Amino acid sequence: MAKKTLIIGAGGVGNVVAFKCAMNSDTFGDITLASRTVSKCESIAKNVLEKTGVSLATMSVDADSVTELVEVITRVNADIVINVALPYQDLTIMDACTKCGVDYLDTANYEHPDTAKFEYKEQWARNTQFKEANIMGLLGSGFDPGVTNVFCAYAQKHYFDEIHTIDILDCNAGDHGYPFATNFNPEINLREVSAKGRYWEQGEWIETEPMAIKQVWDYPEVGAKDSYLLYHEEMESLVKHIKGLKRIRFFMTFGESYLTHMKCLENVGMLGIKEVEYKGQKIVPMEFLATLLPDPASLGPRTKGKTNIGIFAKGMKDGVEKTVYIYQVSDHEKCYQEVMSQGVSYTTGVPAMIGAKLILEGKWQGKGVFNMEEFNPDPFMEELMVQGLPWNIMELGADESRRVD
Ligand code: NDP
Image (cartoon, rainbow, N blue to C red; front, side, top):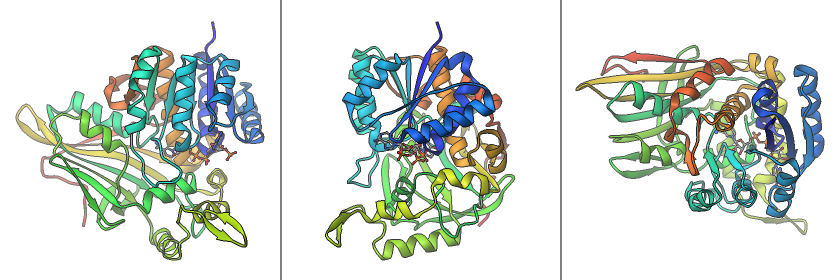
């Protein structure tokens, strides 16, 4: 019998997931797209039908309400729920999946709307509930987290006995022509990049001021770029699962214009997440700012250039030190031609579809809540090659680096 797939969230990433599931409809069967604003689902469904010939069902859901979610999951009779709404909805959607006995997948870890902090604690705490409900939860199946975790697992499986250091390198060299815009949800994006930096060394987390550490890395097919140390969620699970790890850091590229705008907005209080009173009304500055910035979904047709995200790992194999760089390059314009989305939504949505595909095909199986690196990376790496995210591996000498400053 055909499977039934429920996608929740009709933003930039939801659009890509909808397209890619439709392009793999042998696996995903009957596909429903549900989100807060049903007109956004309908417009995606119209484009998917025109481009792929596959018809999606659409419906509205308030994913902050477990009761509404249970109703929708039951109505769809879903075999899997792909959560590409916002991180604020992770726990309600997980709880609804537990109640309905349906597998769950997301791309970003839970964030409380009132605290700019993200961590796996509350999602990992649902492991027993998931086991008891006999279902699987796959956390962080986007690019980073997601593919970067799988790259680490692949390096560990095929190239190293022990990995000592990992630098996750995330470069977006896309140009959308606006002086300032974010490539995914503005609120989530700005909360992430304005937070303190953090990396892990010798068993301890070391905190830095926001953007305090800058290095210049040379990204294949893109060139040398200023890259800033940030805290990023995949490090929290990788330090638990990668053998022999001594240090892990995460770097992301930012241009001068983005950083200047962000600093200025921060200095005037526009990145605040606490309510302020304005003319007798309560507003949250960051939410107000998000309404002014371009909708990330609208950047698709105007973004040019490439993304390059990967992992740079050093460690030991058969007693010899070695360095391996695994990376993936995407082209914003090609992504748009294929699924009407820019590269950042594309590189997140494709891995979400692949994670769900492996679950539905029984290639990744388990009961409980899991991070990506806990599974065999090989089938995921094979799917990346054929689903639009081909990757490369560079083996370098023990002392070689791509760092150029
Ligand atoms: P968008 O803001 O474009 O889309 C989010 C969608 O979720 C919108 O359609 C929104 O509805 C819907 N939504 C929000 N709240 C609710 C609710 N309460 N009930 C139902 N639907 C709701 O975000 P993106 O598509 O850019 O990002 C989606 C997810 O992907 C986020 O969690 C983000 O953190 C994650 N992400 C992960 C990455 C990775 O590599 N792992 C990279 C980039 C993003 P409406 O339109 O009505 O507001």
